[in-house]
Image (tube, rainbow, N blue to C red; front, top):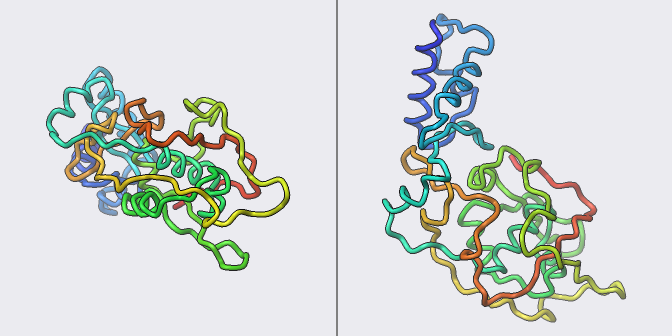
Length: 254
């Protein structure tokens, strides 16, 4: 089978799929009797990526596989196809998500210790409904609190192939004054003793939040990890802890 035909097949499969397509899925497209040379699929992907140079779309690899998406520089115009009101994430939501991403596995109580306020149930529910976080286990302590970690959908949304590609905390904005707010006398404050974190019920995110728009049907738009200032709700001014010292290494969720 010649290379141009392989490229057309791979391109059509990625465009037709409603989800990112893995290398294994692309290899399964070709019957056993149509043997391919080693690296033929990879070479086709490389050629398709180069063919997108200078165009409004690009072929990218995320945690779940390969997909086509709209380039960042043309997103403001493409986003006008959708009329939904832009989603605004509160600082509390972003801080909670960042703590889970950088310190996973982590319990809700540990998040509350660092932030110094009780985590709103709306925040946890919204992140779970978005399938950005999930329970990946339970801490072996009294009460067996749930351990939260991120998901493949989280990586896909932020254009990441793995957690190793998360930007260093030092590069994130508004995170330079963060220190853990843990007690010095060894006592761990309970949620009942912490002030409530006012975080209203959040509407579903819209396409205008994203910096990239996936052109395959029914795929949500993706956003850069460095959200612009308009995504921050000034109602919550609690800073996020940037101390990356934790007793467990980040777990790469599957």
